Length: 81
Image (cartoon, rainbow, N blue to C red; front, side, top):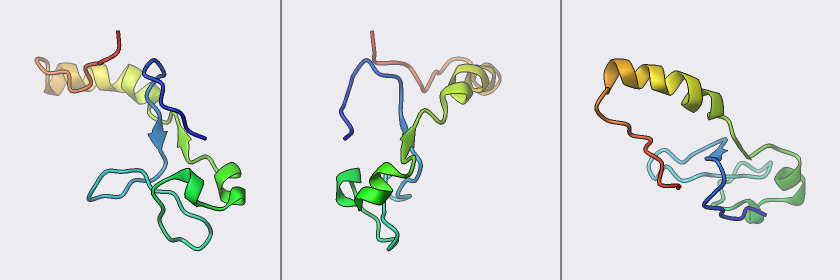
């Protein structure tokens, strides 16, 4: 079960639909589904669909990129307190 938490760090899906940028999930049949709840139990619990994959990139590499390429604009401005 995925629960929205405004105070949690950003979580990323492993796969995204390119046109809509929405996460996609699938069972072994390869048919994309919009939610984890729509896929088989085995794939829902035996695969890492969501995670904190970009945590280090956002903390370490993005600040260096921003200083060089967009010093006046932080596109990752947090909406959290």
